[in-house]
Length: 283
Image 1 (cartoon, rainbow, N blue to C red):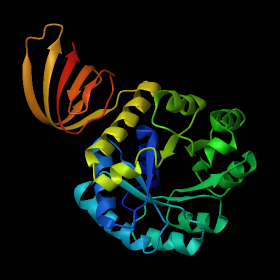
Image 2 (tube, rainbow, N blue to C red; image 1 turned 180 degrees about the horizontal axis):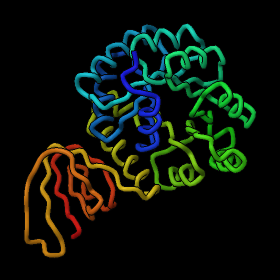
Image 3 (cartoon, rainbow, N blue to C red; image 1 turned 60 degrees about the horizontal axis):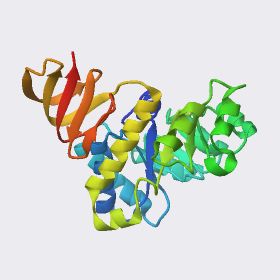
């Protein structure tokens, strides 16, 4: 059964602006990647159905996320038929993503109010998916279909469309800016966030850093402040810089002008980190 509602899933996708896409047949590796993404600020994660016993790995991930990453919304990708969708929904998938549109998958998801995001490569497919109840459609492979200009041109006559771009999305300001300004609901990223050598080395902090950077870039481009999740923070008020304090918990960072963390100095006014940090606040 899904833990999160359809509206919660859609809102989290848009707020974070990014959905990591990942597969590994080793459940322990997958758990570490999920936790690294959670620590980096991600709240929506797409595990993909691409290997033997992927369902077993997914079940372990759902249980792990419930215990260790309670705000993480777990979903399943690479779903091409209704029976497989039903299996994953029964085992905790909060959303379903596919490489192409399948009307039978849409029916299964709609019965449980589970968001279904099918891959679409034309305006006709996007429109048909919406008729079938798909609130968010995926343009895939986005780079080959037409890039950001395709998104912009679809939304001109169909401004209500919520589109996730997957494929040819990179964690750089130039790339993300092009997609976001074109009007995407969110983007999906896989290998760019999870380099094979980093995963093999088990450098989970580096993955957190990649994810955190992408979240910050999304927020800075959109221009909306987001919440700083941190386990230990120290703050300084400027320009007086006379008061100093410590605390733990969740801090609103709409006034933050500088953050110093293990990832270095973050100069954007909106960011996500999840470790010890020093905040410089405007007054």
